[in-house]
Image 1 (cartoon, rainbow, N blue to C red):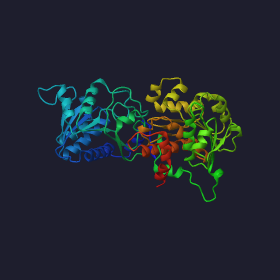
Image 2: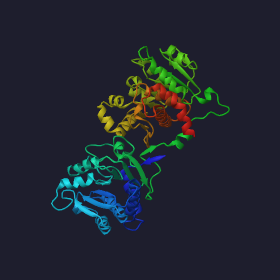
Image 3: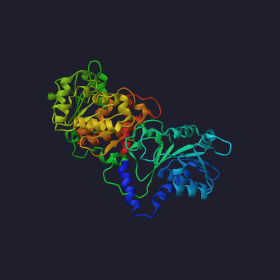
Image 4: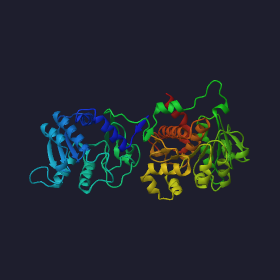
Length: 486
């Protein structure tokens, strides 16, 4: 499992480790890892042109010491100082001893030049190292750093961020202003939440973690499941299993206007590991025609027969009565799409069985009474607020899918997926898939996390770089399942 910790937790761990190490040893560990990553990216270090964008904190010190290591290997290294009087003294001395050059961001590359010449230096570099702001930075870049970030973006070379791209919020993933866009981020000790959550994740590029020996708490701020984690959670039938032991999921979805939502939810459920799927709603003919193994009923959820979990809401229109009936059941319930609008917060909070809500950003914004852009710009805050307000587990869909539990603890972030999943009906497939995992006995957090992981992987496999429909995603779920189990 990939873990991310808050700035406060990282700072505490760093202080505790530095108290046990010789002075400067921790920064040297970070600089060594940074220099190695830069060398790998360059391929040939000797003769390459490296520009360091250096701020006033330890982040700038990491960049300077790493630059000194590259200079000793024959790179032409120039440090551009944004605050010369506050640059890390030890790192600056090390770079100069190694033959590196130093210029001021507001000055010139050489005599007779100007500020433009410094930007030109950045643009001509083979590698630009962003050491402007560390993990404690808030808001976007200061005005004096913006031209350098723009020059780095225009540079023909790669951009490497130190710990995280300057201008993004390490704890929230928010980007409030101009920020550096990196091709690679070399982060130290642990991932930071902003490296895993959009919009900041988009600025980070690839992420390389350097172990510097931090001792961190058992529970992180964020956790991202990996293949091995998902493989341990996927329900696999035993020799004595029958359909009830494997779990039966009920699907209350679809309407005369949206029968396809019911078909797609059932498709996801049939591939989600449960032993049987019961469908209740007005799209029974469409469902049974496509999936004859489905147990179809038109008598409402109460009379559908035994189920271990319900999915309600996809394509439901204004059928508040069915949503209310499902929420009154004493089994886990997944609420999606129209069901989110029709579910009363007080009713959801009063439920004793687990509830998993699966809004996209627009639906989450409506539930919170804010603009969609606020949710998209602050996804972590939004998913936590919804989970607390409804007393439920919330899966916030989007470019970064997050799963939060009302009881607190680590928020799960899904590492799979593709932009091709932004297609009509894809969320219906996810609802059925995650609902089936609920019926199979997974907790709401695990069902949401595993469902999102497999769904995202299925989307990648189905798309393979080309447009894909929701039906194709459902058909690719078995392949994704086999991929996880190896």
